[in-house]
Image (cartoon, rainbow, N blue to C red):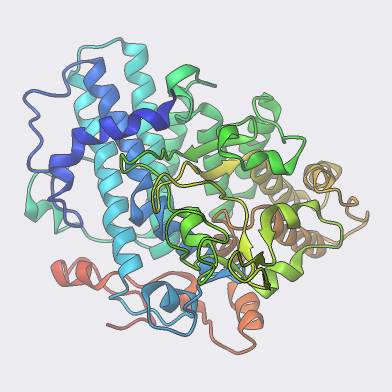
Length: 479
């Protein structure tokens, strides 16, 4: 039994408060007089904070929409419709879009869970070493969620303590991105000092020192501090804690979750407890019936685009591991050319209730980010080549040619990240980080659909309505 098997019980710690939580409103039903008293209470609260990551507004649903469907990698079956994910896919989003509302609400719920731990842990009777670890875990979780918010919405409110009143919850103003990133960096800098290198037994799946360092490296890369990104990612590489698995296909079976390449995964557990993942149901081709997914609905979401399929080089081992170009209909016996991802296969317990975790960070990502940071600071050095070529060699591809220019090497990294990390929630944010989203997406659409303001999403209208003085809409968007 690991972390994913005990999250459900721990979520009950927050259940009474979360049911009434609206946007930034407070938890008003948690009996703080009888809880948060000892190590057992605090462990339940920390584990519940992890569980918030699996909510629909976070990694359970919204994240892959904003991070992949928004990009040229994947699309929704209802591409021409007016469903929330189709609006997002086609850059036709209004401020009333349900996906972005869910993301805002659920991510702040997760932040509230982390803040609750941090507010109460000082008064708990417990071993101080364990207290420090729990603080590190809560600060890591808070940093991860603010990182997702700031990349999605730009300026956002930063709340660092448990909200006590409705007025307090509804009066938080947006603050500049630079200040949001400063808080993220502060949280991760503290977390990396407090978190252990690894865990055993039931604690496998919790945030580690390497996860904090890698996320901090990604934050530095995102903010353009390439020297610090290079140094921090090198620390992860040199520690020797993580490695590339020999076989790319070994990354995806549910039995191999939290493997040696994994730095951090959002944990899901099937079995009718409400903690399973819906990925394979959602990602199976629409109209495929039970030909692909044996139990439940085939959603036709997060489907590979023709651009992604064409991006794989001839002989790239990852292509046939990552996606299928179609399926055989089990009624007619005919082949149906309808591509879908293979990375999240499992037989659900019921509809939308499978064991697939969500891979937030793995070592291949670290190597490619390191190559990007080195190239940005020093050009395509031997160290940069070594990092990217390690990923290519596992894919059974030739190493990159020597003598690439800095610009050509940057494009090679962009390409490598697209195919190595496909379907995992990196592509859109990679394009925005490098300033390539307008050029790449307009080439994808073969029309000038995307503009500079689309680098961030619209602020949910509900937030503007409840706090019009503190929260204004992002430029370019309307009601």
